[in-house]
Image (cartoon, rainbow, N blue to C red; front, side):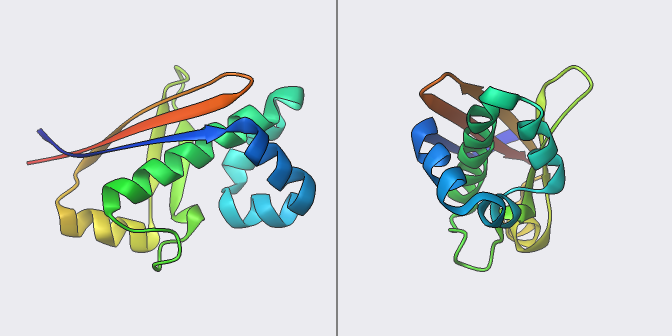
Length: 128
């Protein structure tokens, strides 16, 4: 396996907090899968950080794919899940999956981190 592409994104948590306050469920339903919403909401006061980290991850995937969410790829095509050990993992479907296949992506490596102010995601696409 070789590294094909790498995407990185940094999000201000306050930006996501503003979106949550202004648009609430409309924003979360459009951008996040049900699993991502459940995970973020379980954090209570830290929910904006969790949403911001997943938002950054989705943006990093869009950079890898060379697309934006407005180019046929839906936000929910990218699902950030946690393994039993807590490691983030990607499930990519829909148009995002088609584009990944075109690029020769066979697997993804994800790293995300967040603080009270910032969330960062690094996404590496690997293939032969």
